Image (cartoon, rainbow, N blue to C red; front, side, top):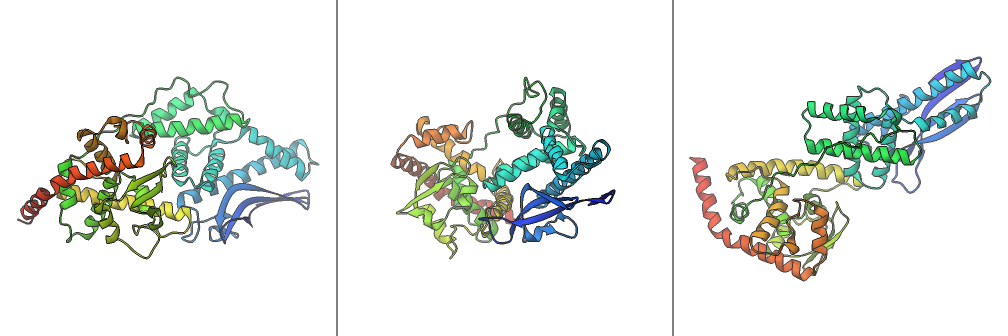
Length: 431
């Protein structure tokens, strides 16, 4: 972008610079401003792969080799466009009020506008911080919320000082009219409030009163989705050799169940070097807590069934970068859940079968088997996952392994009869 003013030319370009301690081909995205033969550059706070950068178009693009998702490409280009528009507006204002202004004066005025920074720009920068910290899931949550907010604002620019109680309540009404679930609304509002508070603490001008005070948006308790031990046994014993995709989904489901309801994200990120002397050592992705699980015979059998030369126990993660791994995890989760739902239909299970059902079922069966609440905490995914982990961490690993063996034994007692039941169902389906 070039503007002419009495032989003084303003040029605004997007440039990239190599990042220190980053992967090859990764660059920092910056704005370069030229005026009166002087130059200023400042970072936009985003990193891109060289294949994401289009020098001739002065923008970023999606690339299969790059590190930006399609949604992030759209957001970054919006950030670039806003930066250019802000610089041009300040340039034209200074033309009228201070004709002899310098580049330093222009940049000073532009920086002062951070006091009235736009909401979308602030959130974009925060999303990039999350990505740099490896928090892909949280970044994705904020990205989804930002898209929702932009749709509500009809893509017009909104500053933090414009966010008042009426704005927030109108936004909630907009989400409900679109059929967004209350839990999703709660997530959007929680993230929005967190960003608002960060901006306020950083000195950005906000509304005089807290716009989130007095709002009554609460998380709704999710419907319980636990299976009985007989249903778990039916899943475990089903002969699925004719349905290899269903069989792979079933094996992941059962592995999660035998691992005390281990979350799917942790299951597919398990590595062979995390198994030492018949014990799995892993760190929960959601909480960062380190856990240990004793290997049961059924778990060993599943591990050997899918053993490959790769580092992961299950062949779903292949990317080298954290972002690639996260993308493959999300794709695998959707695929496995689709096959689990088909499996649930095949076995006439009354609730939609998902990876989460394994976690919920383990806790419920353990409770029904008389395991003390203090050991398993019914809140294992029911009320508070953090509380569950506090309970788990307060007991010795040997005690937890014994609990796990009891749950597995309760299911094993039902597996013998379950095989005959599946054969009967299968024959009926064929007829």
